Image (tube, helix red, strand yellow):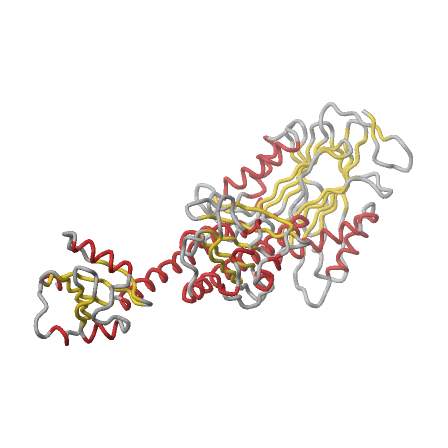
Length: 529
């Protein structure tokens, strides 16, 4: 180590810069490397650098410590060696090592930041993480400002060692030089062009104090700006260097990509949710004195919709009957759900023809016959109306398993209705059956996913119609909701963890204790009890 050696005759040519300073702080000698490192230092001049002068005074007072500081743009480690009454300072240039360590820290930070930013696809959480990371590693405080709408600017602010704070303000971004441009995606304005004293009050976090330096940089997104990042330093801190501004832009590029991805995901999720509302089976209830209940399970746990569906359309538009529809579209997943939506929309438009099941099915068949589609569907229609204590049902199956009726005494009957698939041939035929439900009787509409599900003790046996009839007989006298839940639960238990098709059931029950008589003209659905 330098402090273990004394300067000898060859020290003027030593590759390390050496400056000899006397007890008054005056330079007594300097070697060639010292002159190259400190061109302003000459013999007889006073040691000017404050950090080195303070270290020299401490050595003269009896200390022998290494000092670290900067000479211009260079990082220096100064080692003292006593040379008589004087001190020879060996000045080792560690700029390259410091820059390497700094780049490693920055690389580690960018990797950490990328992982943290990509961990969430929630735009609000992503803004908070961006502000917190920037305040922790880049500045004393940071603001993330999203593009505003109708004068409102959504923003998140965070101070170092603090928590992100969300806010939304009516503010003019052009009050801050470079902010309006950054929110529109223009290149950043150098911080030396920005007067921090002109920063508006809303830009400063509470109790932050005087702003000494300010950086505004855009958050570039995927084709559109994701917002802007504002970095603040207090007046006591050094201003942002060009190198620090460049590094801030590297961080902003990653943050902007993460924010843009989060906003795109949120927009897609919103669109999906809006479209999904019309595809999800509705919640069923009592309609016109008739109890309806339904259960649905998609083939895949990750799917919310599939190829099975049901709807209940209350009486209206001149119809006295409530129309229940249960169907099964060929296929699974999103493509089947799209056809399901088309069928449900078409049926809704054909409700004025619901008094004639055959005509309704013919019109639906015509709507589904297209050269571009080879998909088909099976349906069962059930028109229900209260008649005193009983419920009158008209049931029509179109390529679908016929409904089952369980009487209050546990007897199970199959309804005598048959028909052809919808969406395959230019013409279809079907047969309608009429059934009367006495109080506590229930009619079950179900898709083939219920009876064809495989499982059980041996793992590959179908649930089958025999088990379905047995389970339905056990539900005699139960409300519609309980019967639907029971049948659905038994089918799912039979499948266990094994793959299965889409499943759907609808139950129609003439509840006990209700005696409704239609009143009013033209068969409108208004009742008295």
